Length: 322
Image: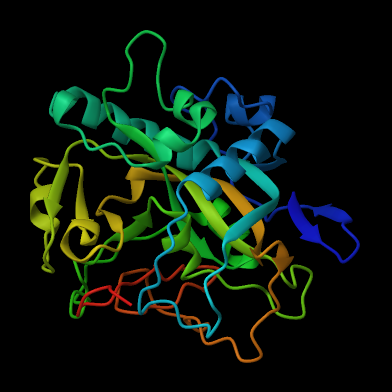
């Protein structure tokens, strides 16, 4: 199902695009999955309306990871909202994408690296309910799973639930800050820099972000730009942590070089508010524009909006201070 928002608060749910079934049960599907066809691997993909409790968790993440900081990546000409208000969320049950994620989790867990050295994203402290979904009652969280955020528009958010992200290293590293990977944020403010609404459509006035479950493992931490993919690809680290918060006081970003490290689980549709009022859409929205590219990779100020191959959120190589 796909959530459609209409003026007046009415939500309409429509069928998701057809996805080929996995044909067998996925590895260790989450205990909160509800569709028996997905649990058995007989259904390719289901998008489930989020519960009231899940929507509360999304709001906790939006509120508690908010940071009153503007960087040069915010290009819509608006002042920063003082609150992002979740209107609806959808949860994805996708056996094939989950199966590859669970396999990657198993590999990272078996590596035995990290433990007390793990860097834990701020999202984990923001919502106890979401943090519990990353922790096993018996074994804990040996792969350092966490939820991270990716800003986009509503239409693309739903498409990514079906297709996930793509990493493409083929000659496209020029201009990237920490290497050509998938960039996720721990702050709702950072993710919102790349969010846009679907002007004039069913989602008019609503922005979107993806809440993704990610296998972090051990962090390769850097404050400076560079191509740091090799320490991750050789298995020593699980991801790169670009710590621009420590360097210039802005945000930390988490960069992944394995598609399977990320499972896009929730699409959250929200509105921007300031002083308790809904912010109007900019007359000329100049956030990263719609572009179609051959593959998803990270470039400065890169666009986010290709339903088939999502172009991933960018950062300013010169430094992220406003």
